[in-house]
Image (cartoon, rainbow, N blue to C red):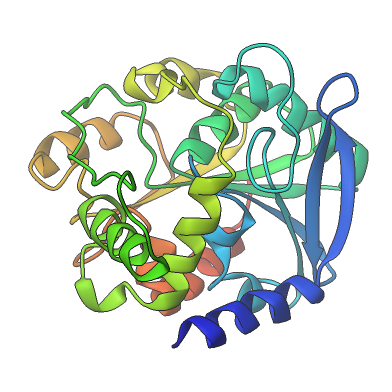
Length: 281
């Protein structure tokens, strides 16, 4: 896929969305997109991300579901609210938006930083939340030295910037170099240029272990075994995940951190199957 085709693909999917806004503080607005009709499914993007983290999943998942994807405050098209910008500060804005816009029972899926925000929302025990799915969820105490990423400093051309994004995607987000197409680069470039919610540190703690006892909904998780965060500590990852009390925990071979992009077809089949499982009354 060329950059021109990638731009056209993003525009095509974006044009299908219904766009709405909710408040995220005084004079600040959070932008939501909705595709499809039916039982609500809410997708929360990762750090340095936006709705585009789900670009390869939205159309499939919105067949028979209404898919709601916000740009969380300080990311993408949403305003940066005053005050702190870590997950615990943003989660109330997201939950308030859900309460305003989403009618009836819903399922909640969070990717990476979004998994932490989703976990905090689940800990508030919203009565309409049926199922929680963590995708590449962190905050479980396995803190590793972050991989060294290349800087854009000194780049002068679009091609030079694209090569930096390709390198960083391979280092942190996608395990297979063949997955790093022009669409992935464009998503990364768009997200990094619009990330304003900085100084996020909760993801480096074990807060998820303290949140799970507060959940009252069914919960599942999906991790990639080639995730740069965990690939050298897979046994520890599996041991800790086993302690979370999840209904299902799936580990994908040959998948990196951004697994719903790298293994989109497989993910688009797995997630509906997880969500189709009966929920205890």
